[in-house]
Amino acid sequence: MRPHSHLATSSPGIDLLAEPPAGTEMVLSEEALGFVAALTRKFRPTIEALLARRAARRGELAAGASLDFLTATAPIREAEWTVAPIPPRLERRVVEITGPVDRKMIINALNSGADVFMADFEDSTSPTWLNLVEGQRNLVEAVRGTIAFEDRASGKPYRLNERTAELFVRPRGLHLPERHLAVDGKPVPGALFDFGLFFFHNVQAQLERGAGPWFYLPKLESYLEARLWNEVFVFAQESLGVPRGTIRATVLIETLPAAFEMDEMLYELREHSAGLNCGRWDYIFSFIKTRRGDPAAVLPDRSQVTMAQPCMRAYTQLAIRTCHRRRAHAIGGMAAQIPIREDPGANAIALEKVRADKLREVADGHDGTWVAHPGLVPVAREVFEARMPGPNQLDRLREDVRVTAADLPRVPEGTRTGEALRLNVRVGIRYLEAWLRGIGCVPLYHLMEDAATAEISRTQAWQWLRHRVRLDDGRPVTETLFERIVAEEMDRIGREVGAVRMACGRFGEARDLFARLCTASECAEFLTLPAYGLLEPNLKQRSIP
Image (cartoon, rainbow, N blue to C red; front, side, top):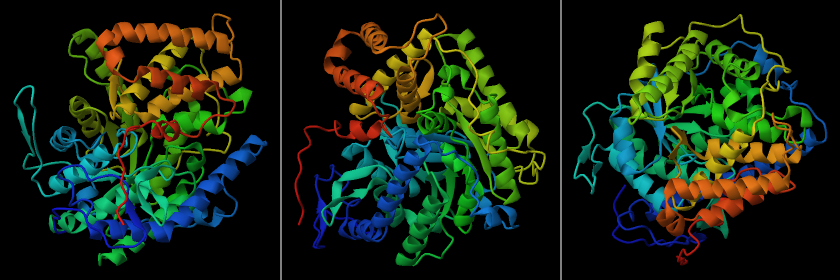
């Protein structure tokens, strides 16, 4: 990779529609953009077809079709096969931490004592042009060990330790475009933009340091989408002269349809697989969205949809059994709690919840787990290492697990309360407001909220409105009640953040978007798609011929 003092591309059909942020010109070099364009030209038609397939499947489910394990792929599930051997540096993934791609977060996460840091271009990053391109530059420097940051307020310097976590990167989902770069007159898929730039700039440096280009793949809904990613990996490796199988990727099982195709996804990615992860928050969101039209599938309060619910137990235990049969890692879900330093008693309760969650995971057979904050790394490690003396639990085959097609979509039991609806409104609006200001990971009410948890808030409010749910106090959830709650919660938000923040922020836009999504006749697939249209409204654009 050679640095460029200015951007200049002579490649026809590649249009950069925004200036490179200062200091990031090398990220958007002519060669790097050419690589992303090659990926786009080869795979954008397949992505478009797969998104159309998603829409068709939604229509079938709305018309009464049921989810089931696929008959056509039964031979794959029944056959004996394994994924490629795990690279030695990835055998132990006890604790993984995730977060956005800003400089301070990258340094703190890599230094956190976790085994893996997943740098996230998806749910915890608001996709402003500055965030995305500076994030790529930050990772270039992190891979080479040169990343540094000085906190202006405290003057504290941040540098990488000698020993750091292994780096994974999560590109955006297949549904999200990158509007700042067009190839042949159409926006490139955000997934290919994020993957392509990181791979192009860092694959050789990662290999030179004995690591590799490792990824997390979000929001897949079918094995055909896993097949697409495998083809992307093969093409990328061949294009840059990298041995086939160098890339490794962990698939997040975070959609209800994907839970029925875990074997098939591992099979499609078997030469590039680094296992599966139980992305619980997106999974709950997908559960609501997938069964949106069914009045019998209305979920209780978000706080009651715990991992002890039968449907969640079925999902996670099936993931463990499937992965270990195929010699692949099964990574547990996110602990979203954050330390409560101002209240030791509340902090002790929060840490106990984390401890119980991780104890369940290690006892079930997970090979590692996720946390959202560096302060949770010691707790998670202590619990796992007490019960898992080796680097993983691949030898625990969990042949006792029996999950049927009826177990996965079983509706969680619990109550539906007005306070939970109020919390959904408050979290949804506050998260969207931060996202519109370019912040994708927000601590709210002692939990780390990202796009996935905001999606639960939004879709649950939509579902309760759509089906006129009766709350535990007997009130039906109507638009009149919802509008009153939105107004009252906006007043509460104003008291929480103060008049200056209310005046300077984007709360009005966030409120209007959240309310519009919750009261729409159809449930939007992702809140980030309409929100993306509001992001950077004053963006000055230009075309690079």
